[in-house]
Image (cartoon, rainbow, N blue to C red; front, side, top):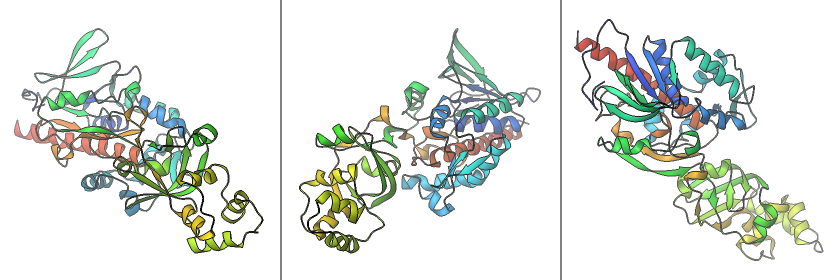
Length: 414
């Protein structure tokens, strides 16, 4: 490996050695690809077990990917400057490839009503056990409780259970995650080590997080935990359809997460509580309700709004007495945004290793022989299978880049 230190001339009698730092989807994908290419692979894991973040994600069913048409699928990735880079990763490993891989591990998948794709087992552990067994059979060595500390000469260094350790490496793949799961190993502590080498790292920001709204006392007291079905949420020019959950601090859920980037800068959030019903038709239904009925009954019968949804309408002030005004409130309930939940409560993070620090093979321009993949890079995506898909795909690209780099090195040194 060159870059942090000058590598020695490779010995053709010795196998090519690559160290992968991190055992999430990106790191293990890279390890598998490299082992299949005849490379000796060591994986360093800071935690007591590999892929703990995968296990945590799998508590909800391990949403691997999504069945959306390609154009819509690829539009989910941001920021805009990152989209072309992620497109190139998905060209190497798309949703169909990820499904085939899971099924090759004996884990058939299914597509849910929302279009999300899951292992039929609806949990991560069976797939992870099969994957780790496959890696072991391929000769990949996984070293637990090893926290990466940088380089010493041409060697990768780590703090292990018995003190400092060194791992000879012809190349390195960094796949240490972002900064949103410190208890599971993704704490962003790697950023300082790379910044010290002159590599630009963008500040970490929460993504796929809840939004904080200044509720009146009645909402969290009575409705915390209540679901809101079939919403359209709008922030500026960004819109998302889906579901949300009322929390004591505001809202969270898929429709909220899809607007993470916009919400970080937002001062207001607009909810359409009846996105499939035009405003004029809704006003007509409200006007046709019996004159003597209570407002709660009119909302229930004419608009299908009960409980938490009806309560939210009052958060913007007294309800308009006329059908047109009430319909307008239902279609555009605007609430002030007080902020977003922090990294400690976020599902993922934005920011991280700046993409322009990497070439198309995901090798760091300043550190030849050092590659990076996964959530530690500066891109983001909503939940729904998009995050995992791109992590797997970036690991594939990094492994291909390592193989090309090693072949070039060997050609130069012949």
